[in-house]
Every structure is written in structure tokens, then in C-alpha cells.
Image 1 (cartoon, helix red, strand yellow):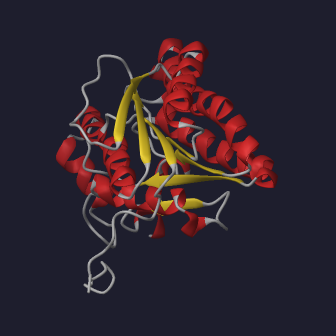
Image 2 (cartoon, one colour):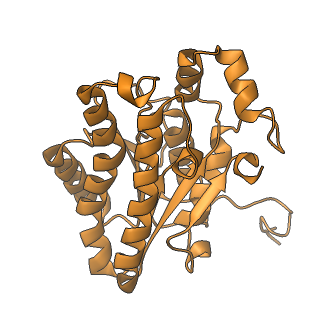
Length: 262
């Protein structure tokens, strides 16, 4: 008799998003690549989208790489056209692409700083949604997961423009959830705390109190006093991408070691 994964006590990694087509922006970054790999491990056909010239962290049989500029509508439209032609209508969109921008108080930023961070972090989410959601509407189903941050819920003095963009993503997610639910399309935001990523290290290095003091201030008082790992965010995305969350929309999934609880 063949023993099933459940009978053997081993977790099956083939079924949670099996048969789904998923797009992940920022798919060559730390959080995006962890998300893309986990979705592929659980059965999805994954299109990983990122900037041209950004190196992929590795290869996976379930992941296809595409170049995109999320701030340019023509680039977004062409990438979505290619994904649709090669894999079919996307069932899942994960907007993980983002930049942190320069540290400093609001009055020290330039107009170019402002435009770039809002273009990537907010306009990019909107453009991807604009070009993916019509296919989801046609099939009357879909899940969109937008990366916000704990600082989409709270303020912070180190990178205020970044925090502002993440607040915008949070409310765009709620508004789109209200709009597209009638079509069976769910939209949720995910809010990572301090993560063990290159972006987090750049933020710490820019801090005026030094990286060590910055991390102590950020995570030292958490109920779980450490940084998170990329796969811990990826598992949250997996839940929101799967049919397990079919009654979940307009929600904020906070994964922060308890930072916002104290």
C-alpha cells in the first residue's frame, strides 16, 4: 500500500496553490524570492518579475523570470501580456517590489526622492493591479497580496517617505478589496516587521544612531526579540494566495514579532 504524505506525518508541498498562476513582483529580492519559491514549492506556476539587470538568486523549475519596470505602464502591460500568453490568466498577484529610499526627515528629501519612492512603492502596485485585475474579473476569482509594512500602520522617523508609501498601499488594498469583491477577487495587505534582508540592513546603516542601536531600538522590546526571516513572510503570503483564505479580504496580515502589540 502506498503511504500518503498525511499518513506518514509529512507535510505535502504540492497542493496549497496547485494549478494556480502567480505573479510576484520584486521576485529577485529577499522577500520576493522567498515568496516565489514557496508558492512554486506548493504547486503554483510562478512568474517572477523584477528590474532588468537584477540577478536572480537561483533557479526553480516552477519559476520563470521576467524583466519589468513597475513604474512604466508599457513595461507592465507587456510583462502581463507575456505571462498570460505563456502561462494563462494569473490567479494570484503578489506586489512585493519596493524600495526604502534615503533616510532623513521629510524636509531633507528632494522632489526626485519623493517621486521615485512613490512611483515604485505605490504607482507600481496600482499599475500591476490595473493590468492584472481585468483577467481576474473575467474568471471571477483571484487573490492580490500587497506588501505594506508595520510602518503602514505606525509612523517612524528614519524613512518617513517610505512609511507614507506603505500607508498608501494599505488603504489602496482596502479600497480595491471593497471594489473587486463582487467579482470574487480578494485583496489583502501584508505587514512585515524588521526582517533579515538587504533592505533592512540598508535602513540600519543609514540610521543616525548606528546600525546596532537601530536594531536594538526596533526589535529589542518585541515579545519575540529578533528579526524575522524571509520564509516567515512567505508563509503568510501562501495563506493569502491559497483558497484557505477564501473569506479573507481587506485584511492586514501583520508578521512582526509583536512589534505593533506593545
